Length: 112
Length: 114
Image (cartoon, rainbow over all chains, first blue to last red; front, side, top):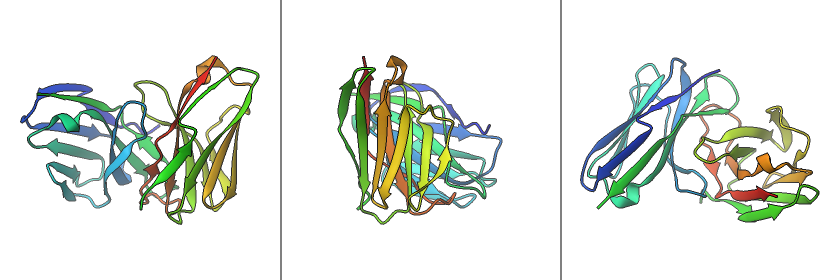
């Protein structure tokens, strides 16, 4: 079973702080997606990365896919209360159907 | 447009009821998925359809019966559920069933089984 470990599990920070969330595995993924989920809602796609070493920016969010395509990170600059939510990474198995393995999740709380 | 819609948003049912969850997408995606998510846990895959044919069944109990009547619609028929089946049920779709294809999720149906 492929596992994706996210760290930290919980993060409570104040508005304006920076943070990084990590998503690690011993397995190689053909692609990795990051989602943010609000309570009782479906996950909303933030980004998909497919190339080892790839860096993508989405406003204050920076996503990186590891060179070996086994890990990824999400960095948020100057966090805002609207960033609060559950962040999930999800990797697709290499060479097979698009069956996602979800990470364990990072719950972020940003306060004023 | 990357929208996946699900109805109903909330559903309460007794253990003897029969109900159905519906999912729709108009992105031309040929792969559709059902996930189950318990509180504070990541989504767990239940079923995958590719070109309207069942491709993956993750050993889901027969009280859950999926159906894909056409390329835009996905149903999940529920019968004789147990209280432990209460969860958020998520539908997703992707362009094809490939490892590099992004999955887009619907808002989910919150199911409560009494």
